[in-house]
Image (cartoon, rainbow, N blue to C red; front, side, top):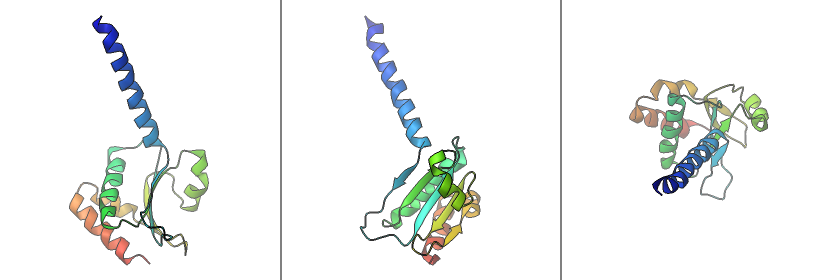
Length: 136
């Protein structure tokens, strides 16, 4: 009788794991709360299989954006064919972090900053905030 109870629990856990993994590999956008068009967006590009540092960069970027509630964050899988155009536009073949102004089409690659400070939360947030505030 016990194995009949454990089987549905086990299958549910597997389904949950697979679903979370699929969502994490796709393209997601955390949109800003304002209805006004954004003058800056943060775009993180990544490959299908992400390393620990790449995931950390995403987490720290989202943490930084808590201070900028109107700045949208886009996570783009460069291995997904539907993202080929934007990946080509930004010349992103793997993990990269960009500040982008969709009105002027200006972009700034801040990938070096992201990788340099991914292991230091406070420094990462401080430096990314500076970049966002000075980006026009």
